[in-house]
Length: 108
Image (cartoon, rainbow, N blue to C red; front, side, top):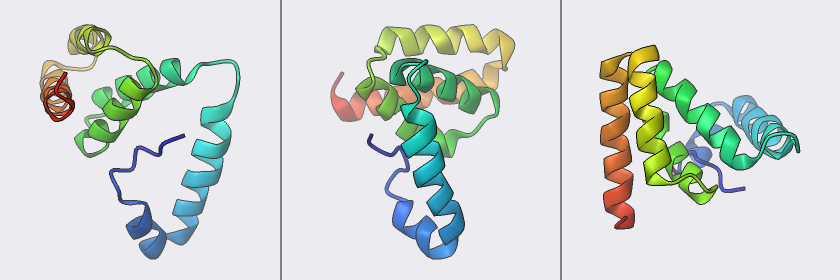
């Protein structure tokens, strides 16, 4: 699976090698590969969590991964609209900006 780390994996490994190891082995090699939820569903859950917790630095990589895992722009937009009422309007606005950036970079 492509790691949605925004190219920061090498930096993380230098600064916090233990965290990098856990992220790569437990989070991506084990958790994301469990069979009950699809990668698409895991991407949607992850993005909803990042939006609710206002973690814009991690959103772009996970938006890209979500699209690669089968989410559509319409589904991302609908999730953002839904989360605006449950997680906060400002958080949803930031997420919408990030989706727009990814869509523009992919020419979607």
